Length: 227
Image (tube, rainbow, N blue to C red; front, top):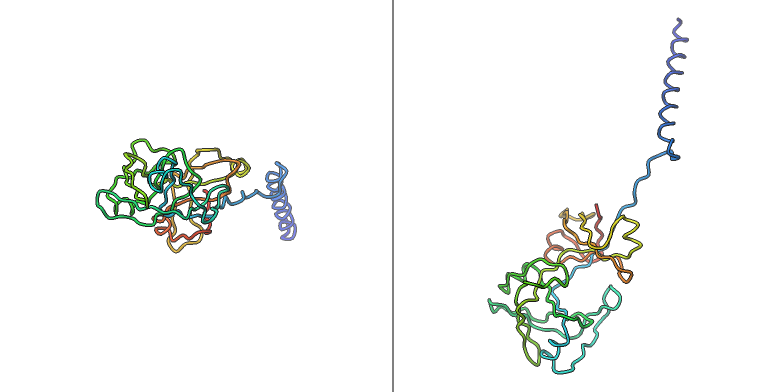
């Protein structure tokens, strides 16, 4: 066989093999694999704050007192109040000017960071919002009085608010736990055990506290990605 004929034969065999490979990749009706869209979520950083029940409002600010709105928050219907309180623990090192968030809750809940818990000297556990059984005791001081709660102080867990549309798109459901990574940070970080909270009233955002934000070099409106 001449050299030219050998080259032609090899060329035909290579082309036939390439054609067969293309056929396998397009058998499902697609010429290339589809890369899933990134599951990116904006970040909101939660400083220490308090959710009050009316019972505690009456003690701290006077009977029948109503909270006054300073500004709306990101989630519809939630707001930062003008009113603040002081938090006191066994170490008697108070945290002053702690913002109250509305609307009024059925039960008072104090959300602090691990650093705050050390400052106050209380064993605040990491909990989901509303899970207060066996949480840390805390004293709140207002302009009209003070109240000591036998439980109610927690370190809020990392969580993501999202709508049912976003949850369905990403194959998630309420109370799932996911892993999240930072995208652009001088301190790359992966967060585990992030709770997914789904509701038609929610706008997409991930809530972390100041300790987590500082450790990961994150600021409000930075984006993270669900892995």
